[in-house]
Image (tube, rainbow, N blue to C red; front, side, top):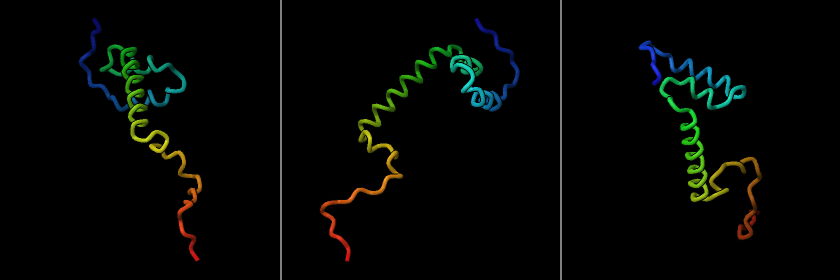
Length: 85
């Protein structure tokens, strides 16, 4: 049983600390800092599952065409397009 003190918690500050430490500490450690997370390992499993579902959804919506990775590429020429004079 984990006892939590009945003190106000500034969650915004905790999240700021997590964002700053994301490249330094393991995700499980960072999630343990959040007051409402009792099992960081379970939260990581949920996050992985959510990412898998997001990938599946993106693939159903058109795969590569669903991303905007090609915005910097020049437009492809349409063979049926009539050239302008």
